[in-house]
Length: 313
Length: 311
Image (cartoon, rainbow over all chains, first blue to last red):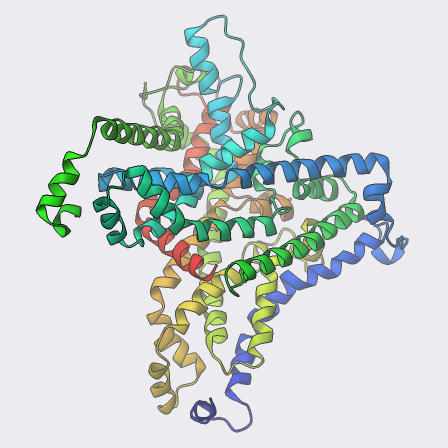
């Protein structure tokens, strides 16, 4: 280390490391301004902020907004509802997070390389379009007035009553899950597909000679090889349990399905930006961020134990 | 491949063990993946054929497999809609500028973080990493943008996303694998950090930078929450936010069609209606992604793998 330093130094006043730091400073400043400075905004959670007024003119209310999340019956009901939606959809996602692994395992069974490539390419496309486009596609396929499904059904059956799939609040979690799978399944499988490509072929050959069938090879070779990746992703998922993001739900929400589609992030947006309950929604968002951090810490510790000291960050 | 590596007799025995059941399972697997592939791409095809077919047929819902009465009038008319040209420019501009700024900034920060001599490197590295896990929330971020005067300011598309911790890790990991000796010889020649970065490190990091650029460009093109949150003025709308508005405000759409000066006397098959605007606009918005996708596919795969290694 010391030797390297003497080589690298060619300005006696500044160490090279400090010079490099100064050159990076503008970028670090950007990170500070856009990622750390907003944390200062958490103070709004402790005031009764009414937007036209300056914060200094508003009354300091301490933990009122935080306690009202459970204390105020009307608010508590809503908070409980969005928490239920968030946890419900997160659980649904986690309970089915083995699907990409299975997808990859069966895809590997296809003998034709070209067909496999074709499937992989086509199923990955939806991941790279925005949720607005996904919603637009949903509209084109499922809307009541001019959607594909209703049109086709009406063509076969003149008595067909047009169903408004998008406004219908039934099975909202399941529908959101299905759109998530449509968009993300092919993409999530890529990681497993690459892992399968890395498995030693001789293991399969040895198994074949020992008389193992297709499913035995999948069960005793492929599956155990993919399991560590699967568990790691599952642990990361636990850490992000409350962070559903709002992109998908924002695109799909409407007045009729709002009750079941609103996750915490979307609720904070609807309350704080669309409505004007800025202080309350800041309090909700802040609480969520802090709980998430704790979850992430736990997930990281578990991961450390599980992967012999290798943490996820 | 299997038969090449194991003795002939064994391989013959393995082949003969392929039963009828195996063939059935193979067919089922192929069929399942075929159906899923169709479900994934048919919607794009459906929207495309509906955007070029006669609009009265589209309204009746009779375009399902093949286009009928093909015309490109929708595309010409849609681009004449108020604000649409501006939205295309904004989308392109934010994608190009945002990606260029992001790649340069992230590459430099990644480089700096890969050098052991960086002043308090551990601290600053953690400073970057924390941003991946801690977010202040929508409202504080919005108030922060307001305080900085970035509402209705094009810079809100560029600056907040200039450096990302995740991509910085990818770049840093890659740069750490470049031999230090290459740089040491440049140091002996008296090259400073700027020269070493631009002349040695950047050219050698092209693969990872291309990967980062592809991911960023797709994200920029697809972004819409920032427009909806920070851009109340029509001047900074993008294709995504326009599409969102059209999907949500049917009345506004018909009003815009009126003010667009589209005459009622035009033949119904060419007349722009809300459905055709939706299909056409959706396809315009998705077209760049579909066009570049085949070329960028390998970068996606590479990006996922590098990301997974670091996890």
